[in-house]
Image (cartoon, rainbow, N blue to C red; front, side):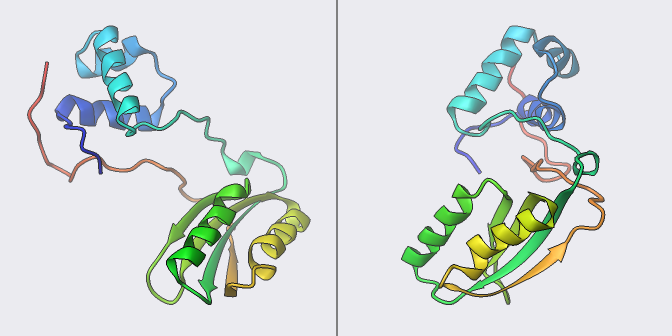
Length: 166
């Protein structure tokens, strides 16, 4: 995780921020029992430690016309560290790559694409998978209904309590 020591208030505050980072410092402080300035100091500490990387607006894909979400399962031919870095760089450069994971098992990567229309999706698949000489094979699964989406990660095990700082 991070070398940043987190107390119970930090865990609650991080959970609240992951649910809705647009809330005011006063609202967040009211929920955790801190002043707005104390909340701001904690948020600044999360940022400087790299725990909080950025704030984004999350769109509901069901409300974006013609959006296609596709989960691509990718197997690469050469899994050397150099080829892995090269392929990761390609994935990071593609704005259509919403998420990318190196995984264990039958596939090497799981790549989630967000495209507008089938033509766009096909162009992206051609660029990222078909034209890459190191991609052995890939399979595309189209998302029919995004039942639950999100990016929140837990900061501690359920039920775990740490010491609270004031």
